[in-house]
Image (tube, rainbow, N blue to C red):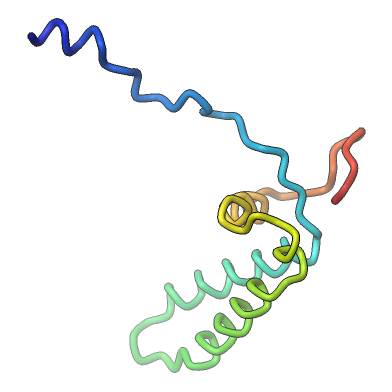
Length: 102
């Protein structure tokens, strides 16, 4: 039985590994996401009792701006949210030659 189980097991790698749909985000949305990530990192590094009220308020405001951005009105936000965070981590998000910006 063990041999039969091993022969039917699938690989641990995802069949779509390395393949991502071509999401295009406006630069202001990527800038907002980068600001959110930076603020979150600052808040995470702040020691307890360090007066983090301003950072928490900024994070809440950025979250609202991200959620209310007009880009999400015409897009599938569930898949796009992950791609936005990935795009915000990259040094540049300018369209490559031959790609039209959305």
